[in-house]
Length: 240
Length: 240
Image 1 (tube, rainbow over the protein chains, first blue to last red):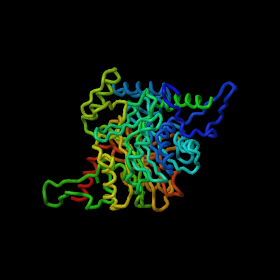
Image 2 (image 1 turned 30 degrees about the vertical axis):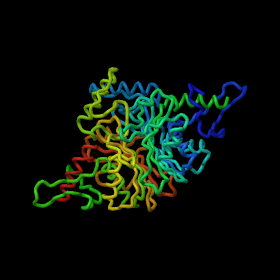
Image 3 (image 1 turned 90 degrees about the vertical axis):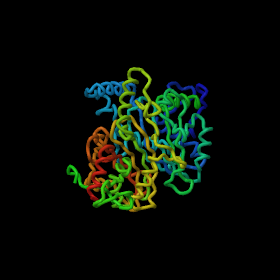
Image 4 (image 1 turned 90 degrees about the horizontal axis):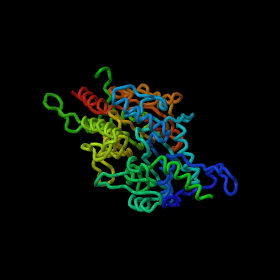
């Protein structure tokens, strides 16, 4: 347990963790999934366990923190400059980031996906131990400081209605449901910043899929906490 | 023609335009599709004409301009306040918008979708004159001033490879392709602001779909121009 948060590495598959050395050896390395993958899977995995995800379409809204503290600083600096009518300082990012967004800066591979997106595709398969699950992702950098958001469309093998999905997520470890349609209150990066839990909302039956085989959800998670440091510590505690 | 931009109302279906009065009657009303729909369909329609879209999954990154000039002003004001460590003024939006993002403020309907999303679902069917096309959308407000961005996943009835798709889009009216994988240069809202053309990039075969039946693309369009005023003028010129 870390700060009262139960170990929540869904379906940790030892084969998924490369380079881990446990026991009496020193210098153990913890292989942590990518931040976007972790945040997405914290919400998708409990649903997957229940109804088996066959396909997942993800679009991300990634914060500056994912590119490091210097990136956060540059976003702030640029924002001040732009508000003063000055040209933005572009050291970390090659273009204006203030009041703008762009495709993730990770290198683009031959198949047209960038490394950030292919990590989601590959890591999901490893973590779920399912080489057949179909995943596509589009990763976008947005002018938010820390905490990523993700729009996730899910297709299931078995039917899963939105009410059951919501109940599953309400009891899922490390996950909090913020899903108030009347008040139009759903997860936001600001609200999850500096928190351990990943927040999920907009839980609804996908109108574009037959029967109850599809869901759309919106997930937010602190990129620095659950997206990186917290998850690594939890893996370590699980294994060591 | 408007400013050299050809009339680009894809598959204008007279039944899709409600309340239009043409000819000698005064006070003609132009029914314009929603901004998010227009921007998405400017890129999707040429591909649809070629290979028939059967399903479309959209996640939007919508600018402040979509909520009006006062919303743009509030975003700027909030950003200044937040940078000065002051609490943000929330008149238009109920929460902080600066360095944050949230589910679109349009009312949420009984099926869990908000009005903005259901407009995309319904208007796509009207414009393509196809009540069977499956569409799902998640609309998110991001701290960008004007120009929406959209991540669009497409499923086609006929195979359509990415190279052919790129060529189709290069010659599509009102569309410009920005798709440089080597330089990691793709459409951004800033780049399309104050321009008439909708920009599309990240054109790639969807790794989660069989054969060549799927594509992922990323589209940006000025919400005020093509997303509203320009398109309305073009409809008027087409009909009057």
